[in-house]
Image 1 (tube, rainbow, N blue to C red):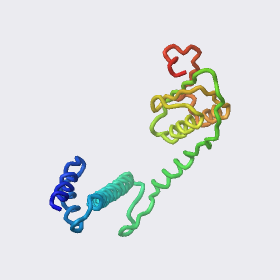
Image 2: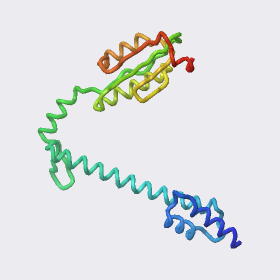
Image 3: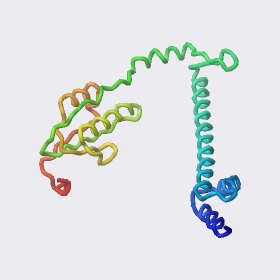
Image 4: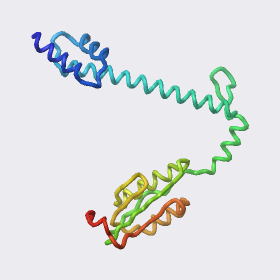
Length: 190
């Protein structure tokens, strides 16, 4: 019916996130008498394909930017058309950075219940992001809750193994652990 078709079209256009060209294309490519769900499905497929194409283009651009940077820094060179090779400078860079092992201990901690609040605050540099991610995972597994990205709190006694791993990762200067003996304004969290 004409009213149903108008209703379907108005609903599609009224959605703020839809682009007019996608809406019209989805509407026109759907068979006559298609339901709203069919038109919406066709529209989502178009948006998905467009999104995938944009991501692929961005990934290709990042790849080419990385190649350009590595060539510019003299770490790689093009030996033959499309064939790349690591330069002497690149090999030296690899040797220097080979020992910068990014392995972290397995998160295998169990926090024991504690009657006092523990606050863990940390400031780990971006270049050591993997350590920061490990610490967040460890704190979550211990049962602490995130207050801010780098501030965690809970009523948990931290195990010695966790503190030992923090020491092994050389994070003692970047991590502060507080135990609250007087709750003050934290009473509402009890």
